[in-house]
Length: 343
Ligand code: MG
Image 1 (cartoon, rainbow, N blue to C red):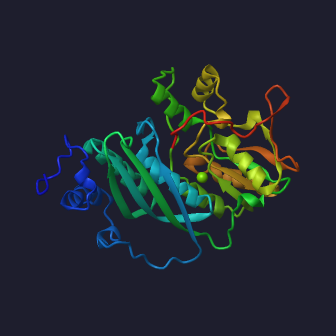
Image 2: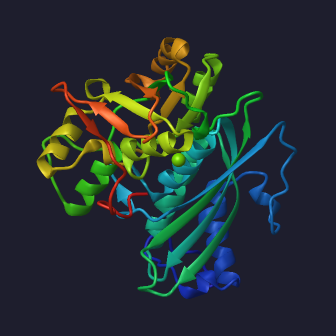
Image 3: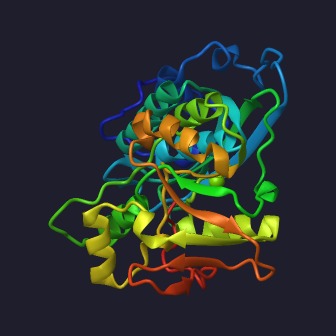
């Protein structure tokens, strides 16, 4: 088949596409390079030679194995961009470049691969990052699950800004950028074929623009983190442990869409443990919380932002929640894995 044009409509990934030979070059040229085109990728060498970055470099890497590959609100391609862009942004950095490695399963439809790469390209454009290096490998049919994508992100930390989960202090405010549980519930519903009255759509989005306005607000930020796998509860437990503090949340302050709340209730799931892919948690000095909140609400991805609680002194590093009924419950670490292959 080498020499002929790639059959993007009916073709499938073949072992030869990972061989390093002509078929692989054709796949890369006709499917990947065309859609991800930029000057760095066009260099065509073993690595991309990038200009010097002005400041401290932030690097983050993440593998994406989400199942199903396509879901309401996104697909593995956009998710692989958003996931890594967000991890770089959570460091108070401006994401600039991505590298992407694909593991393809023999027999995977090229039309689906094309959709995924197009989705990646669109997500990267929207986020203002360039995919400057890539790799593809092919494994035999039955040895993969369509496609896995690993992305590595590079960004530059804002001058004078050092964010870390170790920075939380008793009294700090805890802010959340929007409603919880949408990604996890969208994946679950799609995978299990559940139909609910209102559609469940992933919140998958790049948060670097939101982070920019938060940094611009001048609020004294301690830490940012995106509550992905394990959800809000897991992220807050991580932060509490890192800083050796406790947290006290107000259940009524945590935004949640009615459709997600209803689906969680129906299935007996706690939305605080459901994954998000377009939300962030911010810890900031209490006197600056209102200013930070206003800045967040001024951004499309922070419209429903809320102050959901505060950091407290607690040698047990418990994350507690004041419930709707006025009681308190502990939001413990997640036990086991209720929902694998979420990202
Ligand atoms: Mg993260």
